[in-house]
Figure 1 (cartoon, rainbow, N blue to C red):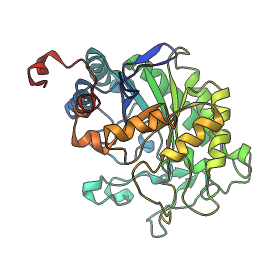
Figure 2 (figure 1 turned 180 degrees about the vertical axis):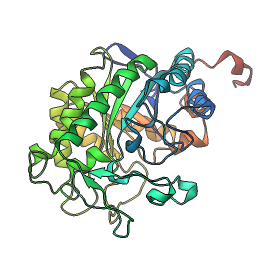
Figure 3 (figure 1 turned 90 degrees about the vertical axis):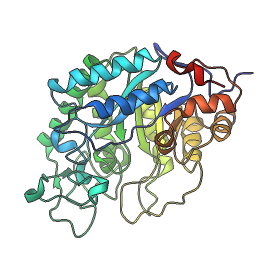
Figure 4 (figure 1 turned 60 degrees about the vertical axis):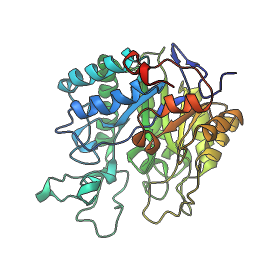
Length: 356
């Protein structure tokens, strides 16, 4: 009998061949936002390795939206050509190409992890960061983020709208809006980082306004027959922060607005967070959102084994399983999982002679 992990899932006009998703993972390997052959091989190998959906790393909607100077971008038309090549290959491997549209907000302008993940000042290639409020991530940062005024908010919304249009031209079939991990949309959601007193701050309704406006802007360019995901951090893991109950409320509203799936992660907003790390530590949040908001969810976070993923689906805790580090360790992870779960799946013809 086929496992749930290798069952199909249809969302709008797209059918995933299995429930295995490659989670967006920054590669810090871009110049001026352009994809290159590293991204082709990285994303392409996960497609030939059997994943049903490949979500490209957090892709900046403007230069200042990047986490680091080496992030991918989709803020100009010239970015489209290489992205289209990558997506064409992913589709040729019977996988679905997705993209995560992102703005880092106050967590922008840092060096790559292997360069220390340090805040970059203007003299070292950094730029002015923006946020809902002028509250820094670390107390000793060289400059404060600039609180977005109304025109700045409208610019970000327009940037997401334009990015969604380019994503369509580049051939993506799933788009995910990044509202997690302490980046700009999450910064607006949480009262720990949003101390505004206008219509974008204070009450729950005001703090979610920016995210809802981003969703509407993306929907104005994104085809209505293609899936739209939103990634959230279900909790800040910090007192008085964004919490699971608010995540359910937001997810209910997003469903009403036509969002198809909530990709449920957690944390990343404040440096003093206290996370309890254990296998599948986000899964209870995905289950809560799925069952209380009545929307499809994706589970992620220290999910590393086939049987573990299968049990999450069998228990009705999520609809998709997103893999990050485990897929870095093994690009052919889905093919291995299929063998472990006694599922017959299609291999690339070039690799069939290695099939046991």
